[in-house]
Length: 132
Image 1 (spheres, helix red, strand yellow):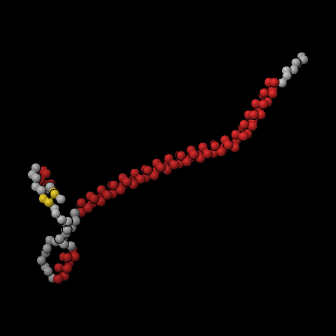
Image 2 (cartoon, helix red, strand yellow):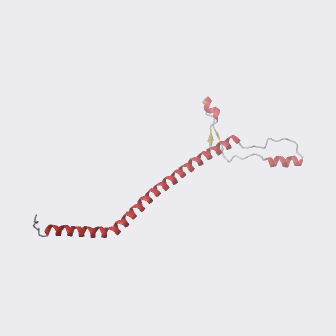
């Protein structure tokens, strides 16, 4: 991996260096404790703590992404529930109207035929002369 230091960007120089392997910590706190127990009084600069600012920044970035994803998922669920509910209510209403139509149409048709025949007979009967 090739890297360009920050000072090279600001000055305009192109100092590049290459990282050819995995970067590792040179020591741990346990190594220092073991050396102190052995009686080695030489202080080595071997305790390398991670960059806490970078860790915090990555954590905040992760939290932001999670909040965005959770918001999108919640909006999707809410929209889906709303559509299913409205569609469900509309579908149930149409089914009830269809069942009502199927149940009432024989009665409606029977009444229509009865009154049609009654009007037809009223028109065709002989007219009587009224004596006044």
